[in-house]
Length: 542
Image (tube, rainbow, N blue to C red):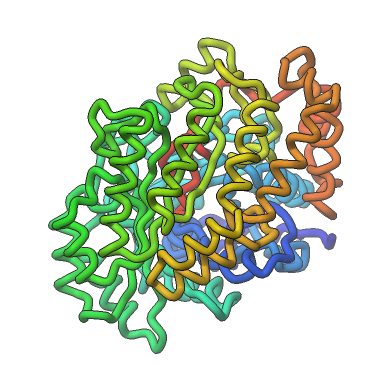
């Protein structure tokens, strides 16, 4: 790669040249599914920082990496300071890029989910690590920054900002990424921060719920309708519709009937039939409720004391009712809870698919990202966290928790059986028939047959599960997950080398030593957050 070349450091009163890199993908990708969808997942906060920096009088070069660009050629050149937004699975790529720039005397800053999840670890490889950011934090940094080779400085606002630059202000950055795909355009809007629910696995359970300014949301929606081909709008709130009437009034007062299609993530407890009727009238075509567990977390699904088969039947009835009003429904399931044991959670999920065939399920494996969420602190106290390398903390390559009732191999045996049923020709056909929304029908079909693990529960994911299960028979994997050794399996190092490509030579020596020998590893006292594709952090799946 060519040198980054730091620009001659100007006086702070002069305009700086700022590079901003949003890592949407962690490595090179060649799949059709990723090419269509990845550009739609550009994070909000890197765009926000770009707007703030320009308002402060600086020059900005903003790029996104979706897995298809020639990243070494795309990276900003001759910058004074480089911001990188990264989720945890892309952390090694972020560390390598930072190391590359720091060798050229460029100051680097990490933000986004990984910065919130692993601030202390990231501080070894960046000059600054930003947690919660507001304009003042960015302004203070840009007015006085310096290299910190002995350890990155951690910066954070006291709370999430009360408002953010809207879609109109960010549009040149939004459009730059959306132009990378021609089939589907999705614009993300953040309507609220925090969550009123108290799920112990969720960082938002400890963050006060706050709505974004309604007038700003109206302006965003009005602007999007002026575009020649208005994109679909995704509300990326942790739980959309907590103040349901307020948000419906925002939409009804600013969106012409039929002008925009909406998608949102919400909880079943908010999706009553009167609410769904109103959502139908206002153009909602996709909803993603989290079911999480058949034996726990009933407050979000409004199931009271229902567990097991009782909960399956009640949730299936609820989901089928949702599909009468919102045609495309996906549901998230997490496996590996302490309340899970034996084949029952998987058999109940199969039964749910039979009762609600139109739903496209997303299966995730329980992953602990540090100690900010109450449940993660419990796992840390119980010494149950396994030091799995960041690249593999993706929710489907294994669990970094010592489970109470399964070995890794047993869990994957059950998961493979469930996936085979989910992707059986009969199930795919029933799902296709049950969906009335044309885009949903074909998206479900494309996801089912896709070889891309990023597509979710598709053929590629089933192959991945089988490969993981096969590796679990290897002695180094067995000893690693049994915690008989701290050195990760050699397979992990080889995969990290392949994923980084030309950036591997810049992977910091401390990381390489950890991967080869298990010492020293990432700092175990870490914060925990989930990448919500908006640059903010919601639940503990960073």
